[in-house]
Image 1: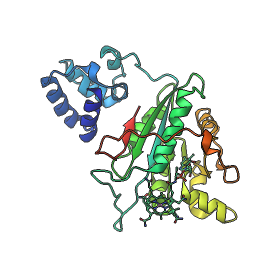
Image 2: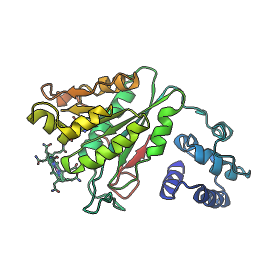
Image 3: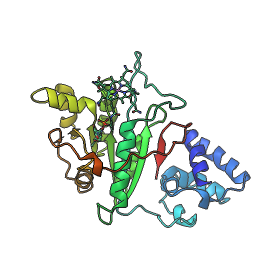
Image 4: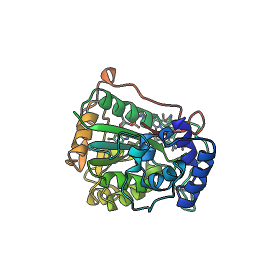
Length: 277
Ligand code: B12
């Protein structure tokens, strides 16, 4: 049920008005706030607009403190010590400068599945200690990237967000750079990896201008494969100690030891990706 509501909400725009309409529809269908998932309840606009209507009350002022989560039976009222890891596969621009986005995915990204599996492994083995990790997997070719949500979660007390631009190829680099720079303007820690960064740092001496631009904005770039080092990079990010460049090209992992890629089937058709856990 919660997953279906999440899909439903994801498909509507999160404007206040759209949420009010959605809330009325859900209430008519007899849906209780406890059917909402935790990450929905920690979204301010859902707390202030949708939950009160489900409870038969007036929507609250948008700036109201996030206390409706508890009211709705959710124990995680504030995310204390929570590390939100966003794994984002960027799309690319078309010739007119629009982001290419499809209604349904056709081929799920290997890189995204791989980083998802590695992150789940770090989480399951508790390699970051008591930190509560939440992983959000987004393929921009079928989903919108929730930039505001990422920034908000990074600012929330006891929380930190990390945006990882995954499997970035040269044709996707411009888009990845734009996403990255807009997140950096909000102070979100960002890592970029994939073939472009790896290839440029492996083949050429020094740092090329487009990668230099990211480094100057405080982005961390990762060259090479990370199966054996992912927990260290995540720990650096959680502790606010990310290095500008991770050169792992000469230190390849033993893949026999690596966690398996992890997929869900996604929410948009059989192959699309959009997942939070
Ligand atoms: C399989 C493959 C495909 C498959 C992808 C299937 C899938 N389901 O994902 C298909 C056939 C669809 C495909 C399509 C294309 N591909 Co292709 N593809 C490959 C290939 C052979 C392997 C990629 C792969 O799956 N690797 C496995 C994953 C797990 O590894 P990875 O991405 O390197 O990620 C690891 C590290 O890089 C790192 N990492 C990656 N991202 C991040 C992010 C962070 C933050 C961190 C910390 C680490 C990290 O961690 C991962 C684990 O160690 C590579 C060549 C190669 N050997 O790399 C070409 C390659 C990536 N493809 C390439 C190209 C050009 C394309 C196309 C543009 C071709 C076209 N003209 O349509 C399209 C683009 C599709 C798209 N929208 O993404 C080029 C990219 C060149 C470039 N300069 O960027 C490559 C390098 C081939 C080449 N030598 O020309 N491709």
